[in-house]
Length: 257
Image 1 (cartoon, one colour):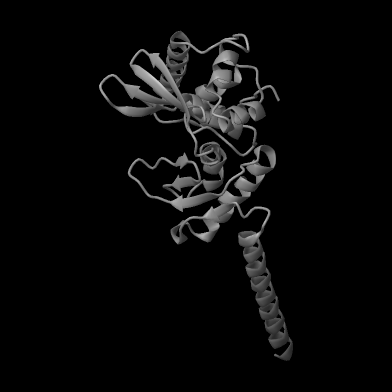
Image 2 (tube, rainbow, N blue to C red; image 1 turned 45 degrees about the vertical axis):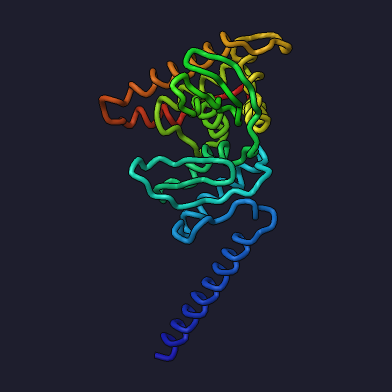
């Protein structure tokens, strides 16, 4: 009986020690200066989900360097689609947070500043470049964003990591398309950081480095990326994803690395 009590006491002490160590590691992890740029935006996100996301954020940052504070916010919505904007990642679901963050950090680590331009295109006027997003004012007076190029960049950058898989064929195709420029994912990230849509267009169409971007170039790049996304999206529009689909979407997009 005495031996049993000693064993139980020893187990309880080990459990207490494990709990204290877990709390200490969690406290250090949450407050580490090196990775303090990635923060919990609200308590609803939960520690488990946040740890999963932060591990991926640390890995991403070691390769690409974010350069700003980013908050992870639990934001349930009916579409269940995660979104990223400068400084914030909105997570609608708590599952696969680590995978989602690898894509969304491309959007969240951007500067707040838009580079103003005024280039006519088929449906109106491109008024600015933010990351690789085209800010658009249409003929019918609407302000909107053409996001397909930047989504391709986010896919190419995320596919550097073995744990990442594309959410659908539309995004997967966009990642392959931007990689067809022959540039590395690090170069693509520099384009995003510097709002450098012109360099992307020149590389995509093999134009000279001093080429001035024209209306024709804008039309061509928008049509190219929209068609590539729609072509991929149609693959799963009329059927459920199979195991083979998941294998394909997990296969690496190699950007000249």
